[in-house]
Length: 80
Image (cartoon, rainbow, N blue to C red; front, top):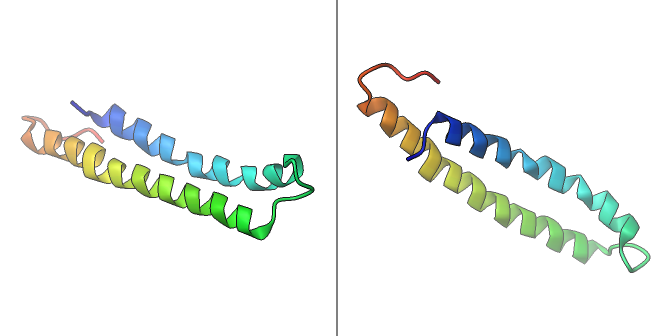
């Protein structure tokens, strides 16, 4: 069952989007082609967008709601 530590871990994992987006300039340098073309960059970013859309939806739909439900059913106040 999810607790506040699971929620915290999911939130921190979601920050990976910043690291992943930071790879775009690196990919342009190490690509087997001379440089990534605009279409390749757009595809890469679109893939990241979908990936993080799923991560954020999971974060809210599963992790956050589970922690909220645990807090509401607990006999003591939540300690967020």
